[in-house]
Image (cartoon, rainbow, N blue to C red; front, side, top):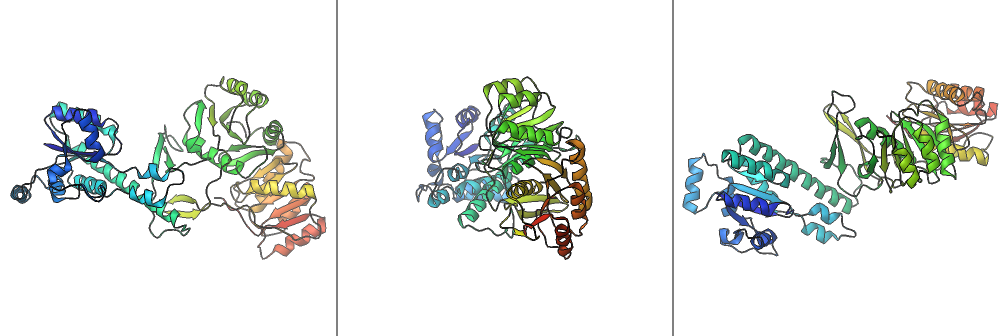
Length: 515
């Protein structure tokens, strides 16, 4: 029996090869793998000795030879195949142990040149893997070092690798090569600066962690990470304390982080079930936390808190008294961390790159039955705005309008957000009509903070007003400024009502639906 070994990831390969040798399996190898095995005392033979043809073109051609692929692909149960091998003086190859040129590691290097990336596109490796996988009944193919032990155990206990294991390994090969090719496609598209959506879409992600369950206990769940550095992403956050993150923790925290990234000044966002429930900005991060907490002391229970500045001892003392699921920050004061860690189940995450946004043009993907819908992320906030009422906003009103516009972008549609003094004071998410969202946000503000808090506040709507009823409700609540996209055939009705009540209104000419 023969095993062909050619790996870029040499984890455990020497030990594995030595165990195969003990079982009387002859080792064939290439390039750096051959050198490594020989240095470690494995009696490997070089691939050129098998093929009778030297490696050439700087190693671009090594294993692309009939003596390799016929030895792999011959079906042992097919007499004609075996007869041809005998006539051609070709031996069978029974094990193929291959992992590919480090394309991922190459493209992740700083300032990598295209020529280097292209040179690290493996040709012979995927070809051998595909050949061996196609003939899985007769050939054991291994691409993941984690599978060495499984194969050795079966060989020692049964004298062979089971058909089920071979089939499992075949499946892993095609997962691996599909991911490899998807990485190449993505890299080339980015190199071409092609922002169009592809005609055929293949994406690849790496599993970060298994989950106890998905959105509900009867569902299976796992977290996957894009190939790349993923700066600012929850997938690279370091967990400092607490239970394992759940599916819902991750989904909710991601929403909170994406909202937080809209703010440059010190800001704290509290989130619950994918919607913000409290947002505060202030030159002092403690004051920002107080604003976020006091915006909705009820909904924050069991929620997520994210901060774009260091968590201080004073903040930690107050956070400790609330039931929170997750806290994320770029850093923590030493004393703050000690305080928070006294709650063993509290998930504390460190994300130094918390302010880094997703690259423009990144994909937003939603699964539907039988397919997906795909779009580029909503990376814009507003390009310009137009004052459409007689009264222009004051400087303070404009500041609060832009603050609240950032919030409503991340509220489930139909979404309304109220803001005052850089604090969210009422949020109405996900209603089936806009007036319900408006009334809900006003009711919540007066109920959860204090009666009359809406006087002098601003209102942001994620899409246009179909009727003037939202302006009527805003006037009754004492709201003095409105920011909305505009674009309704009844826009003038809303403008006229604002003028009648002395409300200033801005059109952004850009909506932010979020479903």
